[in-house]
Amino acid sequence: MKNPAPSVLYQRARATRTRAEILAVAVDLASAEGLEGLTIGRLAIASHMSKTGIFAHFGSKQQLQLATVGAAKQIFLEQIVKPGLASPRGLPRLKVMLESWLGYVERIVFRGGCFFAAASLEFDSRPGKVRDEIASLTKAWLMALQREIAFARIKKQIKTSVVPSQLAFELHAYVQEANWAFKLFDDKSAFLRARRAISERLAEGSAQ
Figure 1 (cartoon, rainbow, N blue to C red):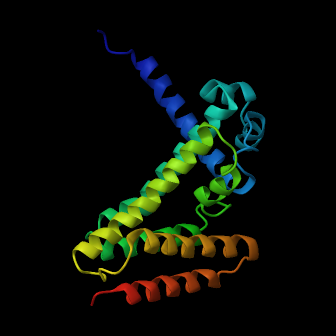
Figure 2 (figure 1 turned 60 degrees about the vertical axis):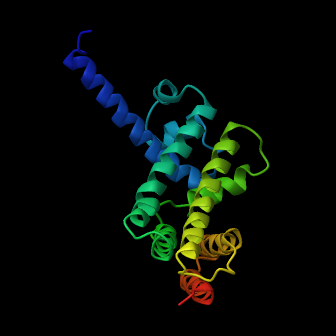
Figure 3 (figure 1 turned 135 degrees about the vertical axis):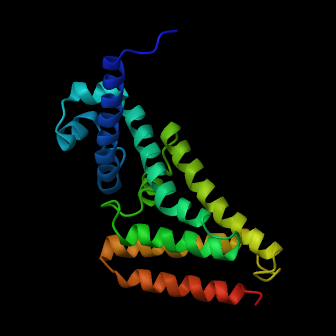
């Protein structure tokens, strides 16, 4: 099989760049205005492209929504999950994961705050592929927190009486509450309170 001609490779690379640029706008837009409002027409205006150009990359509103969720996932992995993986497993990694998550909201990576918090609220009662994908990714993050807590318990970094699913639920709630207070009330002190709550809860469960 012959290798693609340079012109074909160039066109593919250009299409990939254009798609990435469109999705960067889409993720930010959806975080503030909602995935349901993310139509091809709305995105065409926001990205200064034609509807035909947007449609050529995604084909339908649902495919655009799913691609936007996928783009948000990659940003989440890069800014939150990746820093945690560089830390030792258990309590040290759990702390980095939570701090990275708070920092991601605090830095206003997206205008609407945590993309998945906004998307979960919007789609929790709307069955379909978009809801299923959001639910799957959100659950995966909650389970990642839970796994680090369980590992920390095995390594005796936290008390054996700590229930991983319960503690993960509480820690997840602290960050979600900070995101909500910051976006609704512009309350930046919510991050300080969330960090204090996380620190105190982990200290309470510590085996040291």
